[in-house]
Image (cartoon, rainbow, N blue to C red; front, side, top):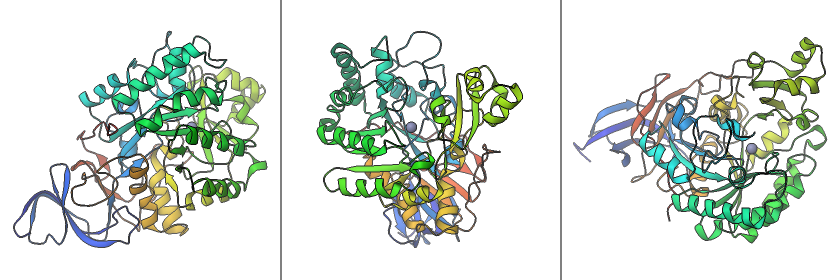
Length: 480
Ligand code: ZN
C-alpha cells in the first residue's frame, strides 16, 4: 500500500515461508508483533528497515527439543539459540521439566540436574508466571516431565508407582495441562523413570488425548531394543489417543548401525493410523549425564561437566583415567555427578533420519554444561549449511520447513512457523552462501556464521553478530 508506515520492513529478501513452498522475492511489513504485509512494499516506509538483498528470510526456527527450562530465566538473552535463528523453544523434554518440581535436599536427582539448580516451582503455573514476569529473548512452550512428576510423588524411584502415587501424578499433570503445557514428556531410559512400567505411563498419558496435548518420549532403549521401545511408544499414543513425538531419533551402538532403515520403515507404516513425528539433531554424538552403561556403546566419551572434578570438562574420559592411573569405570565413579558426550551413532543413520520427511530438526542442547555438546550453538546452521547446501541432502525450503512450519503444526503453536500476513513476526535473515555452524567438539561455545538478523514478535534479538537487549519472548500456552 502506498505511503503505508510500518514499524519494521525487511526488504528485498528471498522469502522461504516455512510451508516447504519455493522461495519468492518479497518485502515483509511488520506492525507491532505481527506480519501485516508481504509483497512489494517499495512505496511504504518503516520505522526500522532491514535490507535483506541476497539473503534468505525464513520464519524463526522452532527448537522442539530443548532443556532450556532453567535458562529461560537464568540466561534470558538465549544467545545460543537466537544466534542460530531460533525464536521459539519447547522445554521440558526427556521426562525432565523444571515444574512442577517438588524435592527435598539440595540437588534434584540426575537427570533432573541437567536443568541446573536454584529454582523450585511446585506448580506449572508458577513457572509460566515466572516467564511472563521475566521474559526471555525467545518464546517458550513447555512440556510436563514424567520423571519430574515421579520425583515429586514418590519416596523411592526404584519401583513402579503405586495407585496412590499415580493419582498424585495425575493431579499434577492435570494442573499442568490446565496451565497450558503442550504435552507430557518421558525419559524412560533414565534411572528414575526406568522402573515405570508402560501401564504407569498410560495412566498419565490418558489425560493427554482429551486435552489435545502430545506425548513426547526419549525411548526406553535406542540400541538393541529400539523396536520394542518404538512399539511401547506407539501403544501409549494409540491407547491415549494422542500424537507421539519420538525425541532425538537415533540408533546407537555399532551393532545397530544401519537400523534407521528399519525404524523409519516402521514409523512410516504406523503413521497410517497414528500421528507420529520425530526430531533429530545433526551429529553422530549424543550428550547427557555420565552413565556407566553407555560407555560400552560409545567409541569416544568427552566429559562435559563434573561437580567434584570441574576441570575435567572438555577432556576425554580415557585420558582422565590414564592420568589418574585407574580404570575408566573408576574414573567414571570419581567424576559423578557429571555429564558426557558419547560418540555412538553412524553418519549414514544421521543423514537418513535428517532426510526423512517427517523429521523435525531440534538441538537437544544442554545450556548449563561447562563444555557443552556443539549442538547447543550449531544445530540449525549445520543443517542449513552443511547438510542442505554442502551435501545437498535436503532442499533449503524443506530444511526450513522442518525447523518452522512442521514443528509449529505438530506442537500446535498457533500463528507461528510460517511467514504470512497475521502471523507473529518471528523471522530470521540469513546468508545461504555462508551460513554454517562454527562450534565443534573442541571449541563448542561459538555463534554460527551467516545469521544477519533475528526477530521475535517483531523485535530484533540478534543483530550484527551479537544479542540485543530485547526480551520479547512469550510463554506459549496451549490453546484450550
Ligand atoms: Zn533425551
